[in-house]
Length: 47
Image 1 (cartoon, helix red, strand yellow):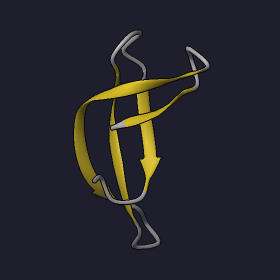
Image 2 (tube, rainbow, N blue to C red):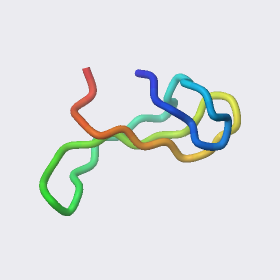
Image 3 (tube, one colour):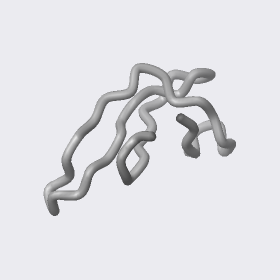
């Protein structure tokens, strides 16, 4: 799964993904940037 890394300012592959639920009940995916290791967050279910 890919997402936008705010630190690299590019679309990167998300590593170590985990499904989370936000406070409003929506599904999201959280993980780490494959390049710099920063935390990445993507709203919506992982495919």
